[in-house]
Length: 139
Length: 312
Ligand SMILES: Nc1ncnc2c1ncn2[C@@H]1O[C@H](COP(=O)(O)OP(=O)(O)OP(=O)(O)O)[C@@H](O)[C@H]1O
Ligand SMILES: [Mg+2]
Image (cartoon, rainbow over all chains, first blue to last red; front, side, top):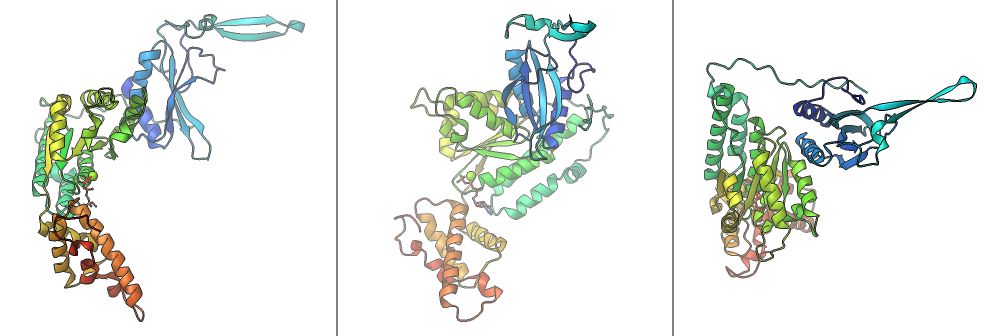
């Protein structure tokens, strides 16, 4: 099941040229771009692992592409996203975030229904991938 | 969140033009302006200016060929600038970045100037991230490595400089579209550096040598520097400066235009003190901007025998 999170995720995967153009758009808007990685893409998992530092002073998107290639080499079987932060209000806030790498197989989520008192039902989504321990979930 | 502009996959391919007017390209690309500024702002340096004009012509033709769909390769643009201290290497590198940007060979046109300490770390695992941070900053522009030979220290076989060299060589080869590297330093040491690092030599297409300035050129540089700071020599100060230049050249640590800049800084200091101590009434703009002979001849260079001691 294809994970759809962040911008552009209903489109076909962006090519590297398209990623580069988006990143350049962010940089030209003075947003700091960075990369994050996870093997647990649950929508409520906001804390992905950072790949290096946010890039504050790199005027060209080639810098991020260099890091993305290094990141894919190590974590090509995980989700990688680009996050762009805007600090113009005095604090960093996410302006744009989109997936730039995903595992070859995406097993998706199991929907669990818990029957509670009074015919109430609580729903839980659980990634099949998260059945395995961290680091062994894909590939 | 504003909807980001959707990136175009490819710019639609315009039909190749049948003919390209190089003259017009020369003018509209802004290359003409850069070269004219270079001619105007930098005194002397005739061989350097000639090489830059030749390089610009080559790049302009390459660009025209590419637009016409003729066989072309991204030309190797990495360069080495050799010459003594203060001969204008850093200054020209800045102009070169501008030139390459206007020709579309680099996307941003900024210059990141570094030395060994910015690239090489202190302990294992420190160098690669440091070098990569600098490379990332320089992407889209020019990376200027001053006194590049310090990267290579053969006397220490575990020197971390080697690691920086390997990363640089890889990026110079594989990311030629992303950045241009200019190595700078004194001629003989650069030659030795290239001999022991053939990897660098083969990746560098343009070697430009910066000659020392003549006394006459240094005097013109002095006048230009003063003019830019809204100062001028009076009639006796000009020959005093010419005399200073001849004497200073014979002293150790002579650094061409930089020595001139430093001498002028000190002359301004002496002028200020002279005015402060001798002025009886209000001073006009002319008095405040005139450097006279005594502001120059007070230099220690005039007291020293040629060839001994440093200048003050
Ligand atoms: N041809 C010139 N005309 C006018 N000013 C010049 C010229 N060449 C150099 N200068 C001035 O001299 C100073 C030193 O120049 P620059 O820093 O470019 O020298 P450099 O070759 O890089 O020296 P180093 O090898 O010591 O780094 C600068 O302030 C620059 O503006
Ligand atoms: Mg310099």
